Amino acid sequence: MTAFHAEMAVHGRYGQPCPDCGAPVQRIVYAQNEANYCAPCQTKGRLFADRALSRLLKRDWPRTIEELEGKGP
Image (cartoon, rainbow, N blue to C red):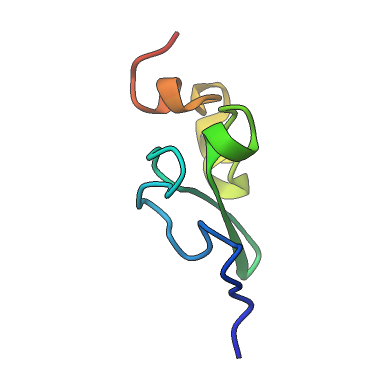
């Protein structure tokens, strides 16, 4: 049995385009779980911090999709 539901548009689609806006689906990993989300549609463009990566990168962790793609400050 899976937790997938049709209304979960980006579930399991990390790296693929969001079906609504086309932005790449992001992922955060915590413990043995992961969550996929579309930053523009669900978090107003803000990237959630992946615990392991954000601790490694600290201030270099991108805060937005634009920073992630190298288009922002």
